[in-house]
Image (cartoon, rainbow, N blue to C red; front, side, top):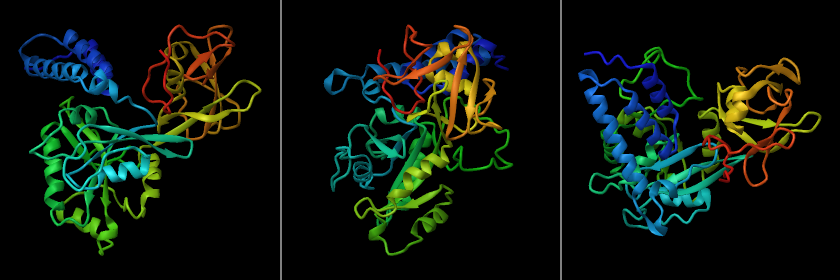
Length: 380
């Protein structure tokens, strides 16, 4: 029986797919359940939605040290959130500590990491949030691991090149995650052209997550074979992009952040006042294909609603060209946003402790909470 989903439901589903914060996803799920047509053709989908609502509710309520829930303790920051997954003793925690300076606990015994540990990987004028997750193994699965992966932007599959059991472990990690509808995907949004077989393909399961994945072959200093990562992928039939690194020796680490910026299609946009130089200290971070309107949404929802036009330096035909809200921004663009209110005054982002905006001194009643920004914390 066809589902015949309503426009209201489709809008809520689209919002769910774009949502990253657990509370935002929960609200979208509740709206999906409210607007879904109630008939036999949607019974399974209703059951899936109710199940996911229960999971998110439990995740948000789960206590941990300090009295905070797991979801609230791991706040998204930076240009993107990247999760480190892998089998026990693959060197994830050591790699995380070296790259971010975190205190992620590492040890010679398995399951040292018991809960997600966030840290920031700097790259030029932005940073990526790296989350060290508990190891993936059938005999021990941390409950919060899957909630974090469902809202992540990408994953690093960290493996130990020197371990003979690595091939079996890689397949076990992939299959265990797939059972929870988390698919490790070799396709990255900024790195590939869509193959003919992929063109127009739609995933009917809205709860299946496809994470762009980089194979990080760790402990390369202990393996004498320079092409061991390629051999591993050929053996297992994998097509992940791969980088060989050594967390202890430091080799290959400098390639990780540039790969993320390129493969995720990170676009940095700066803002300016009329007649003033651009503020290049803290860019807004977007993705390839995003528009001027998306920049305005990062400033504040009210700015997006009243946006009239922008002047652009960079991707325009000439400096200061007037463009509309649908103009696609490019990395390094400088924007001067102009609003319909207050006589088309320029919108001025402010970074005094929180990302806000002003229209010549007038501040909004509420701060922006959009998660896809360059890592500034928002004051509530």
